[in-house]
Image 1 (cartoon, rainbow, N blue to C red):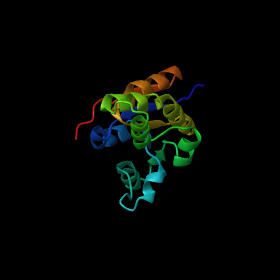
Image 2: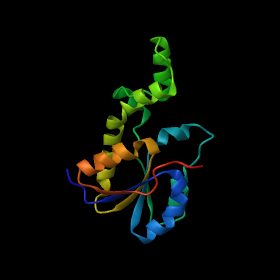
Image 3: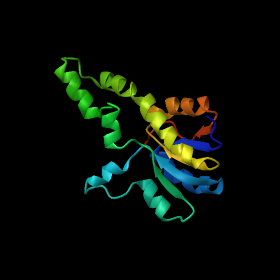
Length: 157
């Protein structure tokens, strides 16, 4: 599969600094590792990207993460489920062990993100994801001949 798009990958710390300059460089889509399910929580109203999109009529916002139902159907657990299962199985619950199990599900999640981005061919997408995904998602984009550029590799608050 070849997608004629450019995906710029960043973390939220760099986002606010880069949106204006990237708009000048052709960014038309703001995409993120997030989904609409999060807004069932009354404490969440909008993501930073949604706010930015609402302030610029030329930008489109896209959620790329699987819905809760998709995750369940594909048997992709949430972090809390991983911890519970590790504890149930008497496995050592350390941050390193949790991350290792989370990473085992990255290929399925990132392939889903890519499938969402297929709808944005011939556009430049600014994609915000966790720093832990940058290498693997960038590699997936490379494998699919999609130009990509990492704007920021580490999260700094």
